[in-house]
Amino acid sequence: MEELKKINLEEIYYAPLFNKFANYMEKFPGGGLILTTTKKLFAWSRKSSLWPVTFGLACCAIEMMAAYASRYDLDRFGVIARASPRQSDVMIVSGTVTAKMAERVKRLYSQMPNPKWVIAMGSCAIAGDFYRNVYSVVPGVERVIPVDVYVPGCPPTPEGLIEGIRKLQQKIMEGAKK
Amino acid sequence: MKREKIKEELKLEETKDGFLVFKSSEFYHVMERIKKDFPYLSFITAVHFPQEKAFDVIYAFRNIDEPEIIFLKTKIKEEEKLPSAYKFYKGADWMEREIYDLFGIEFENHPDLRRIVLPEDWEGHPLRKDYPINKAPEKYDYRKKPVLRRED
Ligand code: SF4
Image (spheres, chains in turn orange, yellow):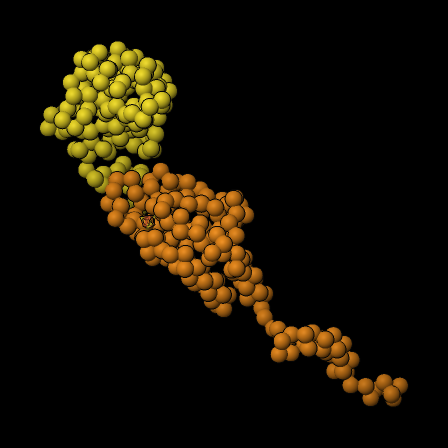
């Protein structure tokens, strides 16, 4: 009985834990522990696999395709185009939105599961560009769906789109800090 | 050249820039003759003249055997209708729908004359010269709709 009393309670509780993590601590570069909240963990995993809807509207779509292809390779950022809005979490609006298309854009957006984000690519999607006052053009996709990141240019280069995606990733991580 | 032959046969006038002008009342007769030598309808387009209240409708046909193109032109009044070329060229279907959509020219005997580019309930025909550039029906006028913002 006396022997038992001598034992430090803290040791009993925490020793297995320390022993268990000792292995991992060595494996991690720098040997530290990873401590995080689930919120940040989710945000990190979401930002690392942004899947856009396969969806192009006008000349900007050509630059978007170039960004997907091997030279610029958006795969590096976990961006892989999906052919269904139900499997996607980001919509890249690349081009002029017309009044007839606006209803389709809205519908595609509402078919995407939460959480979802929107990138407005090019002057047309941002504010209608020089077609702003034309009868059939929507002056900015923000009148149809809420936009997270605006990528200016006519058309933006693939580098510009990549920058926009990086900004969206930043935004997602910042959202987790709140 | 087959173009010259057709011009002589049908006694068509030629304008300075090479369009053969025909009367819209002779439409079926002209189309029937042209179909024999020019089996491919390249495009149909129109021009509006608001002062004269008239349209020029322009047809371009191609010859498949030889590299040759022929342009035909006809003038119609705003309220007049034009026969459809669908009977001779199936490709005329969508081209005539587009002209109907944007100019409001109606084609007789067209199988399915509906709007093709604009929404079905659009008002007016935007490529007419008297159509204001930014006029749109209330439902489609996104310029008056509010800008949406993210909540967070
Ligand atoms: S912003 Fe320029 S490149 Fe992009 S869709 Fe509009 S006109 Fe085309």
